[in-house]
Image (cartoon, rainbow, N blue to C red; front, top):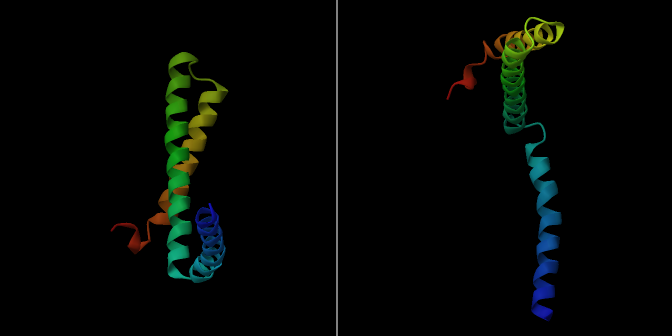
Length: 94
């Protein structure tokens, strides 16, 4: 029983020590920049796909309504923002 408790205590201490070092290493680094741009690209892609599908479903079931036009507008804006932000990024295609 003592060895199990001791091992758990060591693992907790290790987690406490390794987390700040990892965060400090990423703070202000190139990896953090890629991580932020990657998350932004992922979110914009999800918004595009979600609202494009929602617009198609609304068009099929409701017809041309304000909800359909809103979904189309949001998907279009997300597409334009994505194209504007990531058109000039050289490291985007690896």
